[in-house]
Amino acid sequence: MDKLKVMTIFGTRPEAIKMAPLVKELERRPEFESYCCVTAQHRQMLDTVLDIFRIVPQFDLDIMEARQTLSTITSKCLLGLEEVFQHVRPDLVLVHGDTSTTFASALSAFYQKISIGHVEAGLRTGDKYSPFPEEMNRSLVGRLADLHFCPTEANRRNLAAEGITRGVFVTGNTVIDALGTTVRKDYRFSTETLNQLDYAGKKVIVVTCHRRENYGEPMRQIMTALRELAQAYQGQVELVYPVHLSPVVQEAAHSHLDRLDNVHLIDPLTADEMHNLMARSYMVLTDSGGLQEEAPALGKPVLVLRRETERPEAVEAGTVRIAGTSGSDIFKMASELIESPAAYAGMAHAVNPYGDGKACHRIADGILYYFGRVSRSPEMFQSR
Ligand code: UD1
Ligand code: UDP
Image (cartoon, rainbow, N blue to C red; front, top):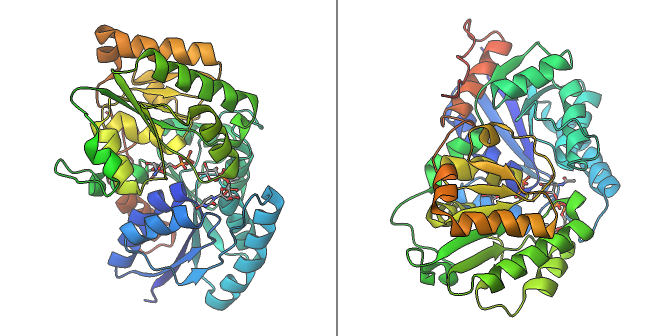
């Protein structure tokens, strides 16, 4: 029987980290002829992931330019992918999550009548503009896709509520598969600042912030709260903030947080550095989706710097709280976790609502089932 031609497409850092273990799984299996195409919506932040996981894409659209608009990203992906698809004619295209690359890749595959598999399907806030444009991207990909790989049962229910019930698998999130390959007790950072931090004597807080809906006033509030936390807990707390390369974020972070001894504004970390930093940290303050999934698996409390989340599972498990985007609320909630051992202990326990490290295996099996190559559907992921 012919091998199945499966093309994995991604463009940004989080997509790359979460697709990397799947690319490896497809490469390992004899049933697949695996192709990898990157749009390079991100450049440096994508390339470090490709290096760490040793992935050499066959196609690279190289679309990144500073400050380009959503329309530019989307049109460049559509045009570039048309050529790639005509060249390879994959049986299935796999896209991930909710970025502009994700949406444009699914739309382009649809135009060419190529089957689409959506990895990390079914996440929803129900608010069309938050996160922006991700909520609409993932909803539209939900309509376009033939196969839906949901991390959790709640994600499956979200799709069912939209009438999407065929080709749906609950697999766990591939990010937990990735985490299993990167975290090590004896890990040494290549970023020297991180080797020198006093993880035992100080409370090391990991910070990230990049969402478009936080641009402007919300980001100003967040940065002000971070500055006040650093000043109020000097000597006790070290803030480590690898700053996203977006010029908007760079400006916001540096204008508020430069010249504070206990704030370390550093370059974006490689995925393995970030995972090992979180593993040694006290807690995480973030508006990132991926960090909300990784930190609970590492037993680290998370305060989410957004007004809502499409990842309610860890909130329900008690390890993640929504802090919102008001500076005073963020300061208050973070202070409580710094000062109260009881409040901290209540949140600092490892839970794994997002996966058991076998998501890629289930996704590969789900593909084979969909194409009639095996008779049994994979067992669904169930969070304990
Ligand atoms: C994108 C995704 C968002 C995801 C985030 C992960 C969209 C619309 N947004 O947002 O869902 O959460 O990635 O980080 O798809 N830049 C560089 N080098 C890089 C990466 C980015 O210089 O390696 C700069 C570029 O100037 C770029 C800007 O960052 O214009 C913003 O990048 P872009 O991909 O447009 O949006 P993100 O905010 O990164
Ligand atoms: N990450 C990283 N280096 C950093 C910051 C984040 O490798 O300096 C990783 C993080 O561990 C997670 C992913 O990037 O796996 C999350 O990406 P991001 O926050 O950019 O996007 P989101 O998840 O919000 O879409």
